[in-house]
Amino acid sequence: MPAQATAELAPQVLESPTLPEPTPILTTPSAIPSSTPEPGPTPTETSLPPLELPTEEKNPPALQAWDGEPTYLGDSKSGYFFRVFYDPGIWALTTDNFGYPALGHRNLNYCLIGPSVGSGLPANVNVDHDVRKVGAVEYEVNIAYMDGTRQFVTYLGGDANIFTGFEVSFKDEADLCLKDAETVLGTLTSIEASQATPLP
Image (tube, rainbow, N blue to C red; front, side):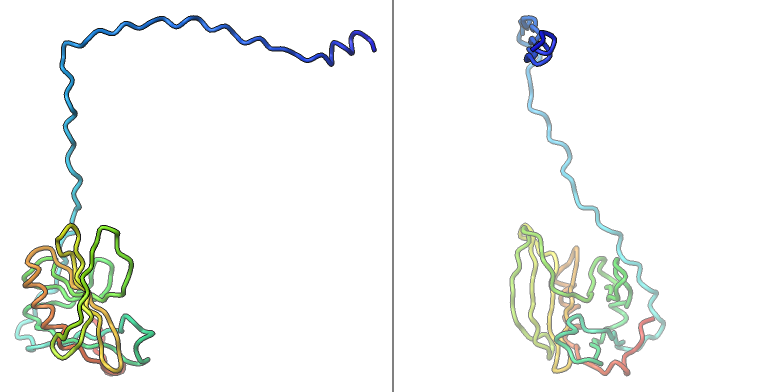
């Protein structure tokens, strides 16, 4: 075999570069004592502004109806809506921050009754379950707590024609909000969809 071919087939060896010896670093104690850093501000949840409610009518009827499609359609008969009655001096029919119909309390900011369908909750939320009558309606009542503080309450109930859910949310004065909400929820009944009052 020619010498040139042997040289081409010979393995090539690469030499590693020699690194210079590291220079020792001298440290001296600081004259300023070290301190534990101060914790920054704790992040807080920013609340949405309270809902703007329609102006109360002059001389409104004693009670007005809120009609809507039940939230559990699979457990309800087709062609039926729910109906609850509310005092227009206490509640106003409006839309919530997600565009759904809801009742907003006129005197308690953030007190709201809206439609509800069961959904998952964060791991840090605990729920107490109860079944009780509110007015003439038997409801499954679920009270959600976070860090020991009530966050909202859901009511699931109906009659022979419908099964629907409501969520009552609040920020302050939870007991008063829930008391006024249960006055409304106790009137729940079903009506034929053809008799439902259209939403404004």
